[in-house]
Structures are given as C-alpha cells and as structure tokens.
Length: 145
Image (tube, rainbow, N blue to C red):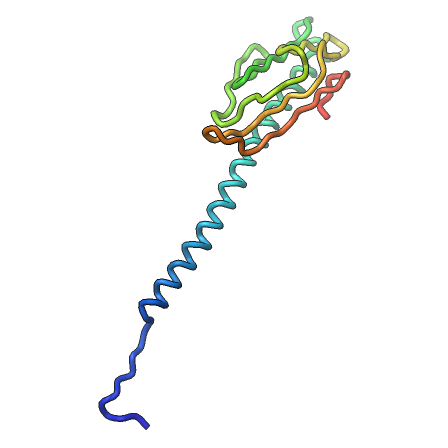
C-alpha cells in the first residue's frame, strides 16, 4: 500500500542514460573501424584486379599479334601503361617492390612470352602507414599466378 505523499518516479536516471549512450558509441566505433578496414582492402583488391586485367590484355594482344608487334606493359610507382594509355592508380595504392628487373614487360608477338618474370608487390598506404599489401606473380609463360 502506498502512502499518499509518496511519488512514483518513471523514466531513466542520468547514470542509465550515460551508460546507454556510451555503449552505443562503443559499438558504433567498432562497426566503423570494421567497415573502414573492409573498404581499404576492397580498394587494394580492386586495383590489383585492374592491374592483372591490364597485364592479361597486353599478353592477349601479343598472342593475337595486334598491330603485328610485341606488346608492352609498363609499371611505375603510381601508374601503369598499356595499350598506349597511362592509367593512374588510386592515390592510396602504389608499387612497393618488384623482382622483374625491368619496369617494362614486353610480351612477344604470337607466343605471349614475356621478356621478364617476377613479382610486383603493391601496397595500400594511408599517410605513412601501410595498411595492406598484395602481390602479382608473372610466370615464364606470361601468365599471372
């Protein structure tokens, strides 16, 4: 039984409200970090797919004797050149290292055999921090492994 002078208080206390807001902020922060990481990886994967596609096109053009000449794929730190076009990579993606010995891979007409083989390593970098790396391996037949 209630006394006449007692009041029933409804609602949340200040502490409950602060704890709820803090919990929501922490969960939101974790989700944001996860999405940012996923987005970074997708950026690098997309650029690697594009570079591999350009290498394959260059090799196929050589196999098909396009323009009756050998075909050249050239890579630089922040760009690639193939089919007579220079394409700049995403600003956060750059060539980290290569083991080909040359920066221009020439695919022989009709055979598609490259003048150099090896690995191209690209990195995704934000500021001075390397977020992720990915490699492209070109074998002695000019095929990407």
